[in-house]
Length: 92
Image: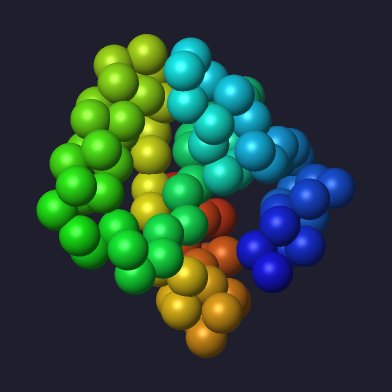
């Protein structure tokens, strides 16, 4: 759902890619020009092992210059406009 709103420069002047490899990771969405990564997490990411992996992944991505923001699946599904507003605010 989010990809349909991010693709094809729907946020003016911003190109996103999805399922993009960065280092040893594959990120959900990335704007390479703005160094912004968007990750969409399901409920399993509340579990300790997933949370620890997410934290390590985020630390590495930030260490190479990216900003990582995360949204829950249900947030994207139930409040897509709010998620897009937040992304747009961060890009400014």
